[in-house]
Length: 151
Image 1 (cartoon, rainbow, N blue to C red):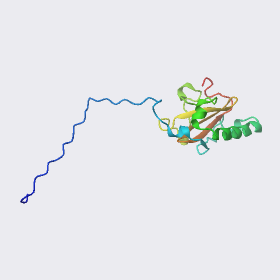
Image 2: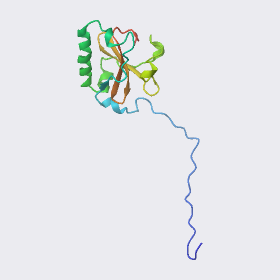
Image 3: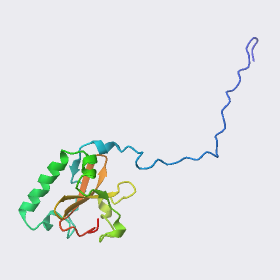
């Protein structure tokens, strides 16, 4: 070291407290950003190849028209309103349904990233799909409430 220069001390870095425990917040404490947003419905992952759960399973055109009427109605609500209303909106556990395998892999069947979700449109008609933020990707139409009749 040169003349007149003092040796600088290194800053002390505290050791981490390993004995501290981290508690995960409960679901009530987690703010889910999309819940205050109005939904956007997408058909990007719509399963056109399924034998039972496509638009072809509607027995008449008036029911198919009702699908769009109710999707439009839901588009004016927030996800929070949809989930707290009479739409029977909930996550789906495939193991307790008639479709144990869930959505086809080609349609993004990644329940850890995008949990499957269902809600009632009208009567016995249910929509199955998954959220990606405020966008709800419609995969199936269950026109006779067969996939999860107890849910």
